[in-house]
Image 1 (cartoon, rainbow, N blue to C red):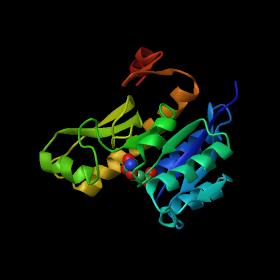
Image 2: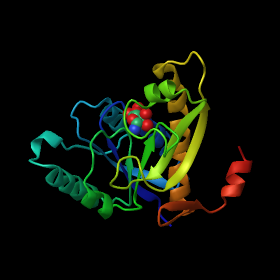
Image 3: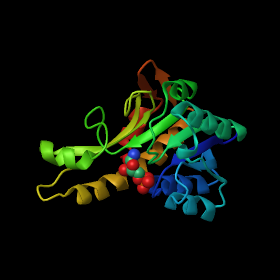
Image 4: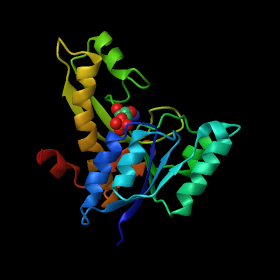
Length: 211
Ligand code: GRF
């Protein structure tokens, strides 16, 4: 079986993109990145993609009259290279229901909290404000409603009494990089099954024991 063809959608820094690029550098890894799309022309993540020799495309949302036409342009670019899985990695646009349905169970996202808690932006500030002791990150399949969808992998991070949103973000980000490439590997190996709104992983017991 060939390697899963992945496209990554970004808007900015691209550190999660870098984690996926690094994972895919190993030719034994079951996925490869065929395209990186950014809606922001000067996103630093584009430089990372080019440095790795990956094709890039800039699709500026401002050039489209509405969300639907932007989403159609993105789907066209994705299908043009035979994308089998879409990875959102700091992609800061809401996607239409139609787009999400088109890529249903073929599009994943990483979010810096233990979903379903703390959906949305300014996550770490809200985590600290709520006084929770444990935060973390989640990789999940994407549904039209923001930060919802079947959960694939999560990692927990302890919240310290003197954490700031920045210090917590930095520790969570390290785990994001780990679980995003892990989730991609599991999907590439064909070990992830979605049943309604729940995802299950073949061999998940072994996975947990190994940590
Ligand atoms: C990450 O924290 C991710 O969870 C969130 O946006 C941030 C993107 O960072 N969705 P990067 O561009 O991958 O460095």
